[in-house]
Structures are given as structure tokens and as C-alpha cells.
Image (tube, rainbow, N blue to C red):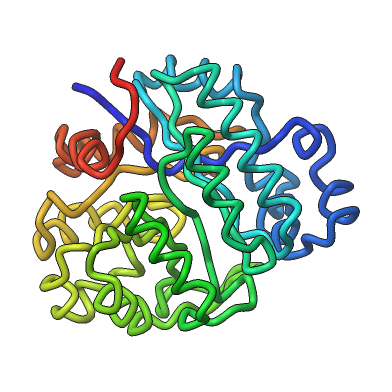
Length: 289
């Protein structure tokens, strides 16, 4: 069975070398709070693998292809650097990696055209609520118009309003995603983290064919029953497998993140090749292995 991990984060070498120092030097405190913090036992919430280390982990887990997602940066410079780094990754490993661009209103619009020309194939993971601009910002609307033109899917961070508090948690009102999907019907939106269970809370979401939901960070947010519960309400054609690697999803079991454990949980939850590969393939244009 083919497996594509559609929610993977990877960072340029200068960030990997010293994540905390880089965050301080580049005025990215929210990223630092989310990504460099330690758990109570002193282990990091995530690691910072190189491209080669990611590929080796994919091989161990049987992951054929990964979609690299950017971060919801608060400044323009990290967006441009991340996009350039992703372009290098895709150019060097076209059959193993695809990548989405990242963006902030400070970037302007040419940044996305450069990313498209460099081989990137989507936008996200974005979080306007964390990046300090409104979902209804005219600049964001212009960017979504570009995504429609490019035929790019857009991955958006979503927080379940009923989820537990954690460092860096930002509220993302679910109704705003419904408004966005209706306003831009030709843009396919991938709502991360099961979309905060949006369609289980508001059935009108099921009427919007441009809303998809990824499974990133599942064990940190929900019990394993979420697979059966969500798929009882939502067609499997609208669900996309993603891990949120290199976030450690099983800190009580693993000292470092591994991809294969969530894959096993998904298979136990009844996930087949549609969720593992075909649905994201439908949304992307990329080289075939």
C-alpha cells in the first residue's frame, strides 16, 4: 500500500543548527514556544532532522512520499528562506518530496510566484490567527486568488475549541473556515488536525466539497477512537493522512519521533490507500515515482 505523509515540517540548516538562538535572532518567539520547548521530563517536543535524516525515517516507515509544510512565521524573511530551502529539497528529491510555500502579508505577492516557479505546489501550513492578520484581510484574499490561479491547495492550522491548553495555543474560530471555504469555492483547503472536528460540530461543512481534513498530531489531541468516529461522519475521500513529523506524537513511548507508529494506528483505525495516498494525489501535481 502506498503511503504519503502530507504534513511534515522541515527547516533550513541554520535553524537546525541552533533552533533557539535562531528564533531569538529572527524575532520568532511563537515558533520558539511551539517548537523548541521541553516536556516535563526534559525531552524536546520535536526534533530537527536534516533532509537525509527525514528520508531515512521515511524509508524505515515505508513512506513513499512526503509533503513538506512551511511554518506560520511572523516575519517575511523566514518565509522567503523556507521557500528557497524547500525548492532545493524538491529539486534534489523530486520523487520523494513535494513542498508547500509559506507566506506572511509582509512578503507581498511576488514571493508566491517565485515559489511556484521554483516547483512548490501548495500553500501552508498557515495560521492567520497566529500570524496577526485577519482571515478577511484583503492581502490574504489576494493570495487565495493566486492559489486558485495556481491550482494550489491551502493547508491551514486549526485548533479544536474543546482541546486542552498547551504552550502557544491560539484560538481559531471554526466558523471562519466555513466562511473562507464559501468565499473561495475553487480553492481546496486542507484543515490540519482533523479541522478541529469541524464537520462533527457543524454538519454544513459536509456540503463544502473544497474542505479536506488532515490527521496531523492525532495522538496528542484525541483518543484513538477519532479515526472511526470521524470517518463515520465524513467521507474518506475528504481525509488526508499527515503525521506532523518531527513532532514526537508518543512521548510516553518514544524518546524521539518515529513515523511508523501513527501509520500503525491509522491502519488499525481502518485507513486505506485513499486516505494514505490517493486523496492528496488528487490535490497535487508532482512527479510520479
